[in-house]
Amino acid sequence: MVRPFKQQRDAHRTPPKPSPIEVDADGIEQTLPTQRLHKLLALAGLGSRRDMEELIASGRVTINGETAKTGAGVTPYDVVRLDSRILKLPFEAELPQVLIYHKPEGEIVSQDDPEGRATVFDKLPRIKQGKWIAIGRLDINTSGLLIFTNSGDLANRFMHPRYEVEREYAVRVFGELTEEQMSMLTQGIELEDGPASFDRIIAQGGEGANHWYQVTIREGRNREVRRLFEAFQLPVSRLMRVRFGPVNLPPRVKRGAMLKLEQKQVVELLEWAGLPVPKAPLKQLSQREKDKATSVFVPKVRKQRRSVLDKAPRGPSDANVSHARTELSRGAEAKKSVSRKPVNRRIRQTTDLTAPHMQKKSDRNRGRG
Image 1: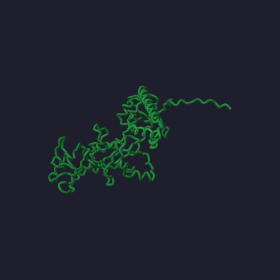
Image 2: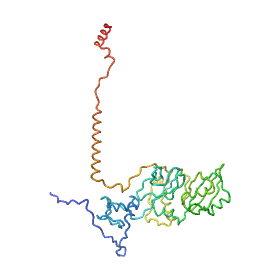
Image 3: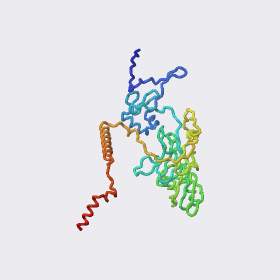
Image 4: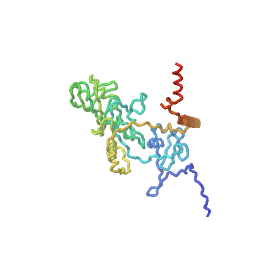
């Protein structure tokens, strides 16, 4: 029996653009709201919003088969491709991730450092949605609490000056403040970049010439805590942040260790910040996942992955060069394999030295002498 001929589908054909209209429960048609393409690409973890604007301008992103333009909006019904690869964009908000890191001295809080120093971003685990944002900065000689999240809104709620979120530090200085100096630090003193003060300062005692103080401040100016103490000729020998807003540094998170907050703790942070909590139910975790989520771990330094902007398809000249290099390397390996063929060589033995003809030759030489 002859089977009917089936026409093959074109795998590269772009599906027709569906109408961005949905019908509600009352039968009324409503137009779906659009979201900015570069924002969704950034939430998908492909890079920053500025990088995604450059990616769209390069012409590598298409919407329903047409080249996307900067500032374009998309709906869940649109088909977005990057270099002919279909992308799954996060239209529905997901619960952000939050990490607590006990930063040691000697690491900088920066993604790019021309001097090649150790950075905290080299230790962060990989993330699928968005990218890690450091909440607040600590200089290279300051240790303590450092918070990372993939939510820009949550990071902005912590860091923006208008919210005046408290930062608490443990400070060790060489010397001791008087009661009058402590009062002046809470009332405010003049620094190079304007007046500054502590909300609270509490003496914690000390040994010898070193004394500890617990201070609370609502600003994040560069080296502000150190400069306030240095105004009274008291150099800071140890500075450690122990609290940032409602987040405390847990005692079990030792220096160089990291802890991921649980889902319920993240929800509490969003409620504290006044941000909307995703409507999706919390993910049900197994006991093993719960133990892993609440366990402290020491991050390992990882290699930085290339940006999406660096993954552009190569031109024909680059492909030819790489092909030629591959062929040359193969030829070199072949020559090495030929030259490494085992050679049958006869090993010289002691019995060869006492052969009969060698004995006769030695007797003749003796006779001549």
